[in-house]
Image: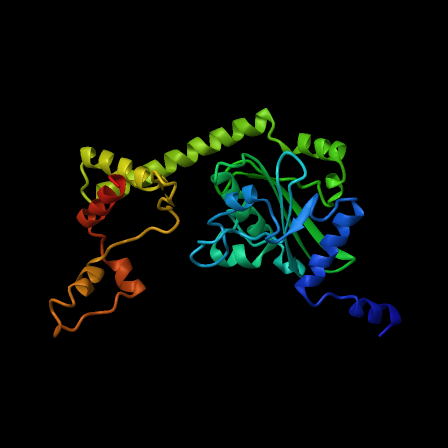
Length: 299
């Protein structure tokens, strides 16, 4: 092994803290000051903390999210997530970036976009810059930068020509970057066309599902309006907020679950477990599901 190869092996990072140190050095080299221009993890303004509420990477997501780094210097926030090794930069499939819990937790880009979506969903921001960084040495670091303009999972634009953090150096460099980041009229028009096509696809799928369950046209109106109401946040006079239901975690009440709920009435009856297979085979009880929607919409 040559001396160069030995030196290269010694310079390889082994901890995620090594990537954190690289980011800190990079921000400092751009004359950005810690606690003034940038901060790490929980050292954030109350306003940003409120925007990140409910976006934790934990399973129940009840706490506020904690990005590795954030910048509040300019007129929109920057969120930075970093990971050790290039393989942890981004997780994606044929449909694009993945947003399942595992991908959000273990990949830099996925986590940064997750935080950005939640910040916009909070209505405290309308734009966020999400940055994913991954590498294994000073000489081998990759950066991906995204302009996020909505809370939908496809409301982002990758800035493919941006490979460094130099645009953060001053207001002039930021303004030049921002001019390229924002959507052009052509991009807005294309998003509108794609959104309409997606909406039509889901509408047809929902119509087919309701038809297969013999739900009449008047009932369909009630179902759809009830589901929309159930997704709205509720806030009482004291300011206590209860978040609405989210489509990504649908709940199906099956006959199997109903039988298990009656266990106390039939203590000597042997009951099957509600396995994933039994859940898939059985149809949801539409009447009970509708009652749940009614309760939610009248609260």
